[in-house]
Image 1 (cartoon, each protein chain N blue to C red):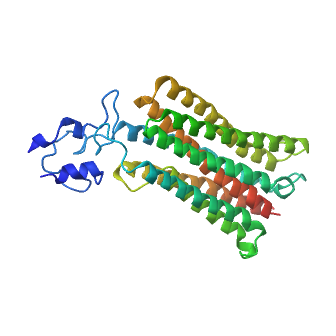
Image 2: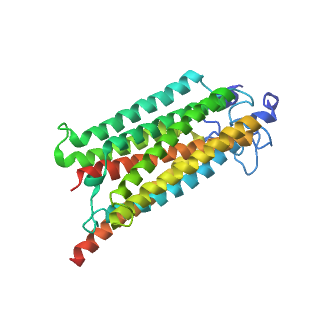
Image 3: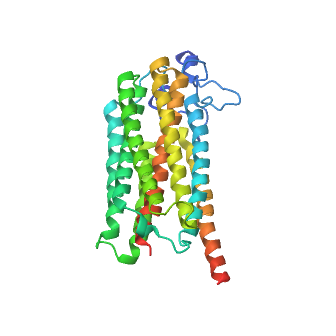
Length: 224
Length: 130
């Protein structure tokens, strides 16, 4: 009697995938036996598709960088320019901010305004520290004559890393509006869905950064 | 028979103003406690930090065969991407996630074609121009 119901409640195979419709489950024409997916799942899927297109954009910049990394026009190379100590601090900031963003997700699911705002504020501070260090690094490179106009290698480097930096900056603006919206409007459904998209965006930026610190900085220092 | 189900059991959150996961009743707190969710993020953080540290230590390390260091850094990076996907983005094998995983697989195919295809084509073009 209670088999379909308990399966629904524990979340195991709620849609009865690969099975005949459970007895007693009403037919929802056109939606499958379990009904349409919840809006939270649909919103997450749509934003995930956007993130994947953004990843493809970064893949193009990665490919351009990989092709142009040896085109230095007699200028400095990665080994002359990159300081891995700086990259380590940037990486730590972004990884910790991804973690605190996850903590904010836990607080949002519990409708805790205080912890949501605290976790988001820490996320924002870590993200701002990352951007500050990156701007400082870019300024140092330009000051030693290694700006984006020096060589094709440096053009590709500033495009790739700068594009990620622009994304993080946009993420910080988004984070500020999320904090304001939680304060002003509470944990309404649409606000929580916006937060879901924001958290996907922020975690995805950290994944892009893995590619940058490995492929550009660490491997760059290893190259001739 | 049908009386044990209410419409709410099958409502998939399409009503305005309410949101719940199919398989969970409305207003039911998320499955598992705060502790289990915190543990998930903490495991992800520890694994990601360990992989990051290994990647940053590898250039000056004697533990890895010299010419293999680049490949080691690539592998450590890919492993960390996996950690982020599982522990931070919650990619799972649950039915809710099937579409996300398929989209990810398609995205990875495109990314591979763009990156490796470009490097491959441009390497051979440079070679032929010399």
